[in-house]
Length: 208
Image 1: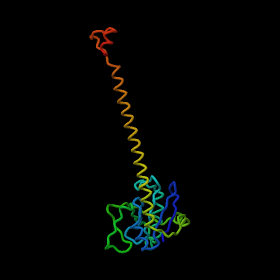
Image 2: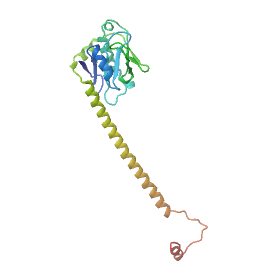
Image 3: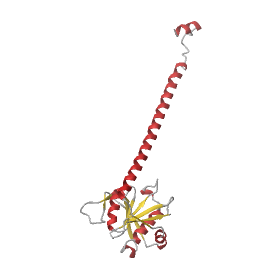
């Protein structure tokens, strides 16, 4: 089972989720979306909390209030960490998580450096606000992955089609501009003041 929370610290509201136990955490490590942000208490046992960032948000520009919500939820769901102050919370994108066969259940490492947050103490108003939104759901992770990939591929195809259309329109515009310049050059040749003047008949013959 997966526990879902809604944070109003961002606009639009953001979804935060975590596994109910360490077995579910294994599935979340495997199936976390690449752009989901993973949170955990550093060097202590805690829940694996994930932020599903709203559309357009990047992991290096997450609002401070939203980071605080995630960090407080992690602290509140750490048996040992919930009793301590001045904790360090680590967080990183889902595609930076690294799981190898020799790791214990729920254990994870990283492909590259992670970011950190410092949490002075538990903020009960934040934790209580998030707990009021808690919803427990059974999740078919594989089907969710398939649906996500289909959606992302459809979006990529739409973007590619728009780019192809824009490129074609730009090419047509450039060809039209080139043709216009070529046409204008036929009738805008600068006269040489020293050149002999042609009579009407000579001009006529010049074009024959």
